[in-house]
Length: 260
Image (cartoon, rainbow, N blue to C red):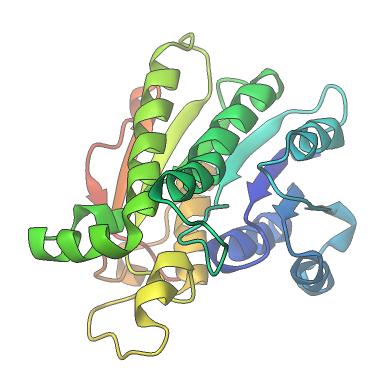
């Protein structure tokens, strides 16, 4: 029997496609998201619905984190914890001040992922992985970064903070702790910040689909064999892996792969 995976932000985008791929490969998937209808749709679409467990709750609520923890049976291990849930911008939420906007982003993008990781650590071992999604858009040219900072300042700062805090967290764990992978996907269509800029515009630059991105990340975290080089597309995926095992120390930029 294969281990469990936990996926936040499983209702759409890369999270949804990762849930589908893990399910196809026989993993028990705990799919977490705020939209019950999206999760029910995912449940109706996967190959093995009997091993897909949906939790329609907000990860900023402590009760949600407890529910995730309790969904994993006693003695079972988590193969990978995928953190895809994130907020890009308030989307109409009445936040009159910059301070409130920063708090809103930090709560979802930093505090909840870090706390959930800490709570689930006893259910992981040295072979387990934790995937954190950083912001590739924070690595753009100075002109682009200035434009992004004006419109998505709270998002970019919270993602930068998440990466720093998870690095510090991993540095204080024992050598047999799970490896923490920090992935900064490139221009992934139909997802958060990409839609914020390009939903109604023509994007002239290379992009990848959520499925392409998810299949690459599944290989990176759980796959036995990387897809052949011929299937790789020429788009960027910035990867860092924090673990004592040299196999997981990726200090290079790797291209994402199309499904083979």
